[in-house]
Image (cartoon, rainbow, N blue to C red; front, side, top):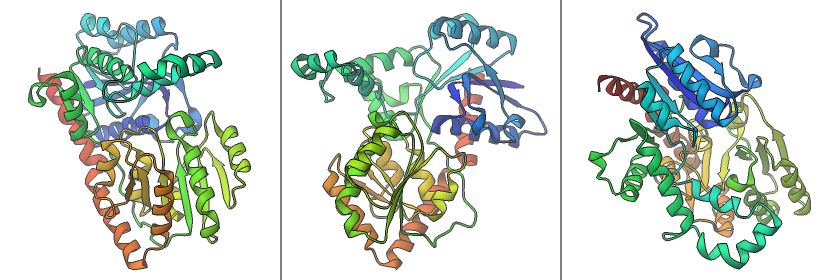
Length: 393
């Protein structure tokens, strides 16, 4: 039997955790007779409110410490106790992970669920998270840390990522364009690297509802630093009076919900509702016509793939090549908008709501068919091939 453990800060939670569940479910399902795989999740925080009844059938959840050094000790002890063969690191940093890797001889996979070098946004944000730092940022740091080709934040992010790359057996990214970007930044030929491109899966929906309501949907964590839901609100303010028979639904919760509700009131938004967090968001995809995404940074946004699989037309800022690969061809499976032009985004929204029904139906059916190429069975097989290859080395 092959014992595989995934490390998560909180489980279940968002997209990365859903991917782990999909992989585990498929691996255990396809090998029920031989019992070839046993899947563990090591987590510092269990989110029992999001547990699926069948979760325990294919995943064993083990609680570990949240303290950095204690967490590392827990992980190393569990590797030895449970005879873990492969450890999948789904967080950015674990104290002494290189030491654990060398001492235990485990096969270590780092799964990057964001765009390459996403850490640059955190580096910049941390230098503006207090009144004093904001002053220093305006006077000095904004000249040193700009997020551009030569910015210090990006150089720091590349350095951190390269250190992780050198401390694992396989480094996964979300698409081929991310592999090319990462290899280029590391100065490594793609064919000589241990970087593997594996897309995120999306479940095929049966009986997709194509008879949609006039609802525009945002679905995600209300964390404005990355998701920039404030842009959604400002865009809606521009067009709400031109779309009198449409409404906007914000599904999700997070640290900035109150601030966003206050902004909504300040902008005097109409026909908007904050729905909060839901265990099953499919009910919103089933009825929504359009999904909007205005993030500052995205890897392979699951809200876009969930929308496509549900016959919802996605519109997103092209903030990464991952977003562009998900939507693939703007106008065929959804629409991308140049970053970060809110006026252009508003114009695109108006245009999509004005499309002829035959065009709407074509895009919806195209998106559903395109997303079926990334089913959990297809993507989990890529993970299975990776795991099997590592164990042969």
